[in-house]
Length: 456
Ligand SMILES: *[C@@H]1O[C@H](CO)[C@@H](O)[C@H](O)[C@H]1NC(C)=O
Ligand SMILES: *[C@@H]1O[C@H](CO)[C@@H](O)[C@H](O)[C@H]1NC(C)=O
Ligand SMILES: *[C@@H]1O[C@H](CO)[C@@H](O)[C@H](O)[C@H]1NC(C)=O
Ligand SMILES: *[C@@H]1O[C@H](CO)[C@@H](O)[C@H](O)[C@H]1NC(C)=O
Image (cartoon, rainbow, N blue to C red; front, side, top):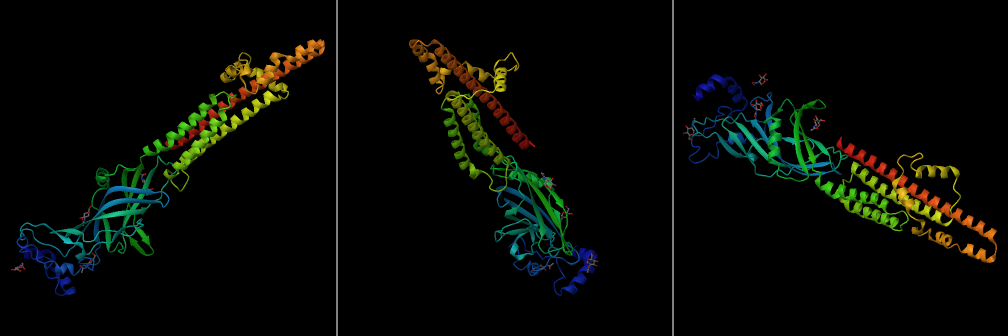
């Protein structure tokens, strides 16, 4: 049976080869008469092992077809600064060695044996993006079947370079490429094929990935484009590995605390403007926020400007702006209660217009009104002039002195001054409300913008 096959199919070809390789080409079929009794002869594959330095091809014009596939078993780390993706792969390569062949019927039904890879020619498939030394373990084995098909799997820790875009951090997705190609062999000598469909690779990888860490495998897709370098053309298979960061850690540790701090800062506007606690409260918040930023620096990517940094800067500037507003209002109140300058007419009418709801502004500022309801006696700075006016000591003195004209003038003067003070206090409250609303508006628009950008 073997003889007929030999003569019919391969004879001319074997003849040529036996001339080329004297003493070898006569029989590629292995004599396996004692497989299964005493194990494989140690010498039975010697003719194959002796050839391991050369590509196993009976005709060197025919390229070796190497089918590859891989399973990604872990996404270990993504280094934003060095732009590196560390992952763990099991690479599988399948190719044919035409010098190995046996008939399983003669060999007690044995269809495959395993062989130490150090005795075999191995395709030099590497990953173009690989940025580390290959740490493939020594002493791996490969399966050879009775048709000479060699199946070789190796584990690889792949540190590959990947263009990372961290703008959307921590809601980012990365698309990294793994390009499998031969180091040496051009398309005339080696062609690459797929051992499995790419969706199978993606499915198996997704099922097998053990880590539920920061990164989740989304999809794997592929492209085949030959690589031309000078006059040489290399075959390659490009895999696009899409991974997504799980943002939970960052939302809990970064976004929520800073959101709280900003919310408290906004709420602190409800502390009365006259209270001396407002500015120290805001300064404390600002300090707290700075400490938070310092501590959270480790969690942020070091390179690039992610949107989250813009968000933090925005929160910080909102706090600074609110502190500045408090300082301004405190200054205004101080000015109003100690030496109120004459109020310009237009400001007066504007103030009147804004504080009396019926005249022009349909929605009068509520806070301004409550502020106005507050009697000036509650104001720490206002106390003195009010008290002095309340007691009206000048009045009694003047009466005693028997000088009613001057008393009346003084009284009118005092009343006018008090009116002016209350006008300026009123103005400060209106300003406070207005600035608070502007602050809220700015905060809402900027935070909405950031969220919209994150969602696109
Ligand atoms: C295979 O080897 C055995 C023992 O070495 C020998 O008896 C047998 O004739 C050989 N068979 C062939 C087909 O060469
Ligand atoms: C080798 O393969 C090439 C291309 O297939 C063919 O033209 C050539 O005749 C083959 N040589 C031998 C010795 O079979
Ligand atoms: C590689 O795959 C192709 C088709 O997917 C198949 O025809 C060929 O026999 C395979 N070759 C090897 C060595 O596995
Ligand atoms: C990754 O990038 C490649 C090429 O730019 C593209 O073809 C592929 O669709 C991308 N994959 C994903 C999931 O975005």
